[in-house]
Amino acid sequence: MNEIVLNKIGTLYHKLGEDAIQNLVNRFYDTMDSDPNAAGIRAMHENLDSSREKLFKFLIGRFGGPPLYVEKYGHPMLRAKHAPFSIGTAERDQWLSCMQRAMDDCIGNKELIPFMKDFFVMVADSMRNKTE
Ligand code: HEM
Image 1: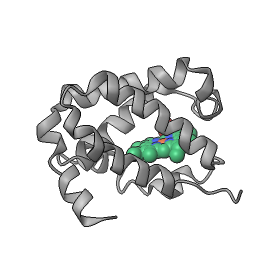
Image 2: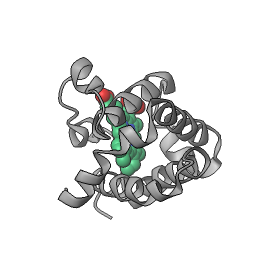
Image 3: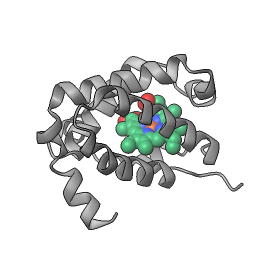
């Protein structure tokens, strides 16, 4: 991952705070759950409560806060965790569209959104596992 982006996202936890990260994750999955355009990726998720808990813990650590995800679940190994699901450009774009809406709704400091977006785009793109 690009070091500059990595360094900048490392300060996000302090700039955003835990409540904003929790709100972001909740809004993200609420959007995925209700937007017909995200029905494809929604169908891959069984229990959104556990998805909310895992993404929240993952982002807290990744954005520079306490390593909650790693303490509970170990190394994320995100590519391996996503391997059972068929993810191509359409699925990536559905995910990013839900996250964009969540950021627009929940992040008060708009200057932070481009850094968060760079990070989400990079990770989401690397989850693609389908030849198209
Ligand atoms: C590219 C489109 C993506 C799709 C279609 C997708 C789909 C899924 C699915 C179906 C699961 C399993 C259900 C669950 O545990 O919630 C999952 C888990 C997870 N995803 Fe994604 N995901 C995508 C991108 C991302 C991105 C960009 C991130 C982080 C920035 C992420 C972080 C996670 C995490 C932390 C888990 C929990 C892993 C575990 O411990 O089981 N995902 N994802």
